[in-house]
Image (tube, rainbow, N blue to C red; front, side, top):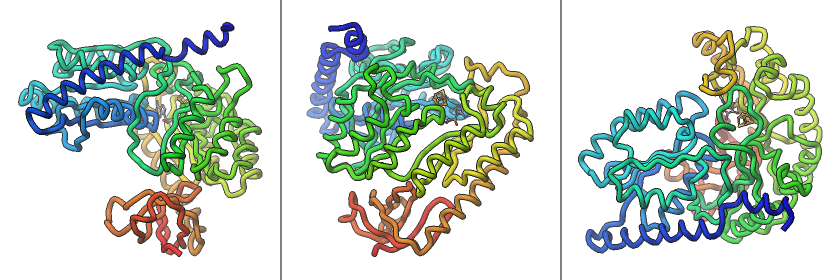
Length: 479
Ligand code: 5AD
Ligand code: SF4
């Protein structure tokens, strides 16, 4: 084996280790089965997920492992035997939410000493958070991080039989674990991770510290997973990674994201392909052409610009200017005229002046995004931006945020208005949450469409004529 191949092999968790975890799954399954025989009830778990799609997908893996261990999911924590919080730390409010949830669990644990409380995910990768939880929330039984998710069966097995809190958080870069069971929430759309970690170190962002360096999965592993999903009847896949555009750089064999989507486009059964997130600095011409050429790749691109001002972008370490971003968008629109664009924007990065902020508004006006996820800058300990001078006062941030929101809402509504009377192709996902006759799905541009339908339509592509337009969704009739 040459050095490169050896290096690649070491990135994967070994088959022996995965087999060891499988043994823990079997052990717990036996315990749960015996209990089920005694009580007539399955053991229940309650799983709460905060944060991004990566976390949602990690929770699908936890659910997959739990299902193999004989647990059933419950949406009520009061009757559960195991409560898990999969946490996020991208912004401070996500962390506060977790602390808010952990406190009241103390009395549940008092009522039911056999209850296991576990907490995992990005927040646990910060040592000061683990210290705080150990000190203040002593009723937590198990703490683990993002890099050792595959070890959950072993950790849970230890936590079930222990008085002490089991803590296992690795600060290593993390490996890739293939063949972890995944229980997908949805039967129509599936997430597929193509790479883990991030090397970009945007100066405000904690992700590279808690998710480790970029590691790409082998092309064949990804294609095998997508092929399986196609066979199982999934119609749409979203390729996931913190920065999917740098997929393959670490493989060293010329594989890149453009090549990957051209391959995924050929997989039978899959009708739609999406991906996120893209970093503007890595969005190559090759990828734009692949998006244009591949019939299944949807006309939607999520392309965070974060801030409009070139000097703020420099302080953010984003590696592009305002003009670079606008030129890139022009190129995308020239090649894919129907493209719907969405973005992420941070308001109130340290040192942001009114003039800087007007560049943010200017990009929003010029690009005309279909939708924007807007965030107040949140100071993250350990990131370079946290130590920068001229932190923007909260009231200034909030006032700018409001102006940005109003502008974006107006544009979103104006774009949606152009759909009035048009017929769009909708992939039907299921019943809408608020009404048992109304079904919901999305257009290729990722717009939500609600319409009267029936359950046979779920998982199918239907044509809907749009009769009503809202800021966040469209309504219409199947034709
Ligand atoms: N404060 C506010 N928003 C942030 N994001 C990342 N870090 C921070 C932070 N410290 C936003 C970025 C990113 C999205 C997932 O979260 O816009 O694209
Ligand atoms: Fe964070 Fe930047 Fe990496 Fe995105 S690209 S995860 S914003 S460091």
